[in-house]
Length: 121
Image (cartoon, rainbow, N blue to C red; front, top):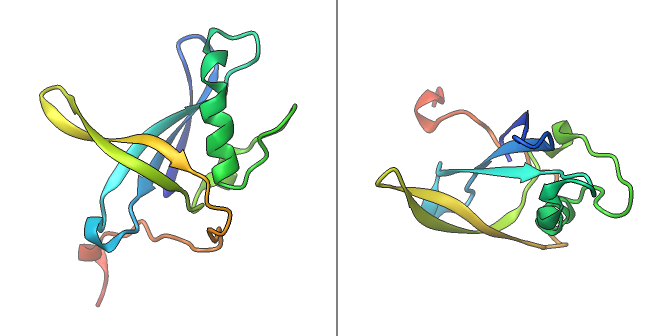
C-alpha cells in the first residue's frame, strides 16, 4: 500500500481509498486502486463488513470486536491480492478480486513511491 486517502461513502460510512503497488517483477510499477469501507453495524453497508475485516486481517491490523482503526498505519503495509480486469468507460481497469491472508508476509518492507524514471542512478 503506497497511498491512502480518507473519504466517506454517500451513506456516511468511513471509506479509505488505497493505492497498491504491485511488487511482482512481471507487473513492475503497476498500481491498483481499491476502496475499503468501514461500515457501522446499523449502516446499509454492513453487508460488506466481512470484506473489510478480511482486508484488515490481511494487513495485520485490528479487525475483531469493537476495534479502533487508523488508516495512516496502512501505508507501506504489504498485502497479497488477486487482481483482475474489468471494463470501465470502454477501457480495461485493474481491480482487486480478493485479498489473500498470508500470515508469513513481512510487514516491514517499505515501498518507494518514486518512479524508476525519477531515480538518480
